Length: 170
Image 1 (cartoon, rainbow, N blue to C red):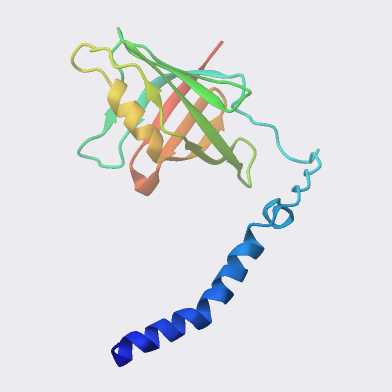
Image 2: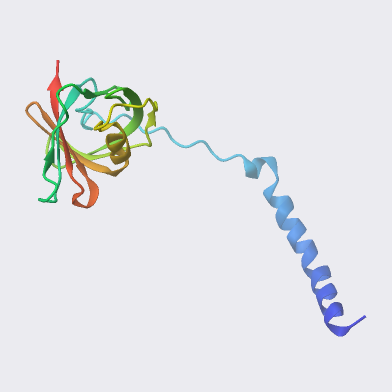
C-alpha cells in the first residue's frame, strides 16, 4: 500500500465512528419531531383587507414613459378584477379568465400599501388583436403597491413600470 492511501484509510477509520454517531443522533424520533409552533393570537388592531369583496374595471394603464403615454382599453373589451376574502383575485381579461393569490402589506396611510400577486393561472383563448389580456397577466408579477382613492384603485408596478388604474364596480 502506498503512503497516501494508508493516510486516507487511517483517517476514514478514525472519522467513520464520529460520522455514524452524528447520523444516528439525527435520526432519533424525538429529535426529528419539531415542537409545534405557537399559534399567534388574532390582532384586533390589524387592518382589514380593503380589497376583499370589491370589484374593479380597468380604466387605463399609465406609463411612466411620456413617449408611451396612457393606454385605455378598447370600448368593446372587458378587463375586470374581483378580490375575494380568501386572498384570491379573479380576473376577466377580455376573452380569457385568470386567478391569482394576492398578499397585502398595510402602509402608513389607510387605503394604501404594498401588494404582491402570485403567478396567475390563465386560460389561453386567442383574443382579437389589440387585447391587453397577456400584458395584464404578465404585469401582475410586477405589481408592488396599491392605493384606493374614492372609487379608483391604482396598482403600481415596480421600478416606475407604470400604473394600472381601475374603477370600482357595484
